[in-house]
Length: 64
Image (cartoon, one colour):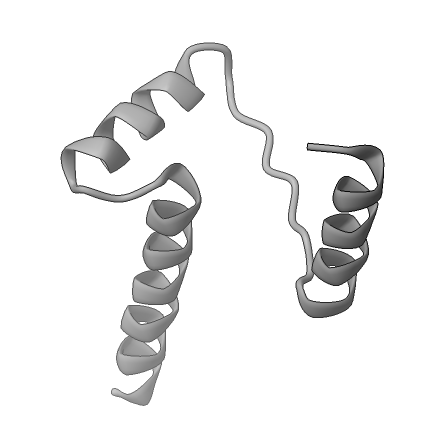
C-alpha cells in the first residue's frame, strides 16, 4: 500500500471513527484474540460486542 493510500484511509478513519486505546497485561491480548477467533470474530469485533452487551445488560439492570 502506498503512502497516499494510507493517508487517505487514515483521514477517512479519523473522520468517521473515534478511537479508544485499551491497555491489558502482557499475554492478555493473545488470550482475548484467541477467544474472539474461536467465536468467529475479529479482536475489534469481539471487543465492540462485549462493550455493547455489557451496556445493554447494565441498562436493563438499572431499569429494575
